Structure formats: structure tokens, C-alpha cells
Image (tube, rainbow, N blue to C red; front, side):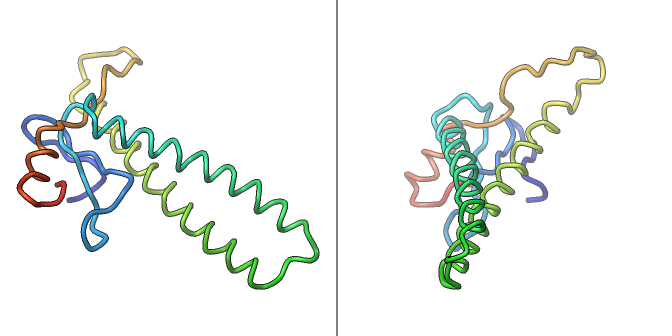
Length: 134
């Protein structure tokens, strides 16, 4: 699937802030008002908050002259993980902004109406069938 969001009949695919089986991207289809979208929003919020906390910790650690190489490697690994999460959030949110603007040529307002993503029925039906989210 190209990009973080793709339009389909019945909604838009949203890139989720977690991966599916084998590390593959996970998506949900719909209008953005259901359980999976709210869960994704909450996880993204936690990821962004943790990234801020980690940056504060990194600043303090870099100022400490007694830090060991092992501590720096640990910090670098956590920063790498956090950057990966934040990049995924940015890709998902950027694609949602793009999706909201598609087809708005006759609407000159600066407001964006509603979410573009999600249907819990798609996610639940797939999970009930033993499959992964789209």
C-alpha cells in the first residue's frame, strides 16, 4: 500500500502506530470514529509524550561527564526506537491531512470536517477470522 492512507469504498486506510505479523504495517479502514482509531490516537499520544521525556533524559545524560559507553548505547537505542515511532505518527497524520484535502476543490474553508479513517467492523471481522488487521 503506497503512503500511510489509501482511499477505498467505505473509507480510508489509516496506518496504525503498531505493526502486524512479521513487522508488516497495520491499517484500519473507516471514518476515524471507532474504537481502533481512538486506541491508535491514544497510543500516538503516549508515543509522542515518551519521545519528549526521552529527549529531556538525553539532554541530561549528555551533560553528565560520568556517563559510560553502555549508557550511551542504551540511550541511542531508545532514541532510535522513539524516532521510528514518531516518524510513523508523522506519516499517518500527514496522510490523513492529505486525504481530508482530496476533493475539497469547491470548499474554500480552512476547517477539516471529521476523521477520514476507520471501521471497527473491518478490524473485528478480520480478527474473528483469525487474520491480521488490514
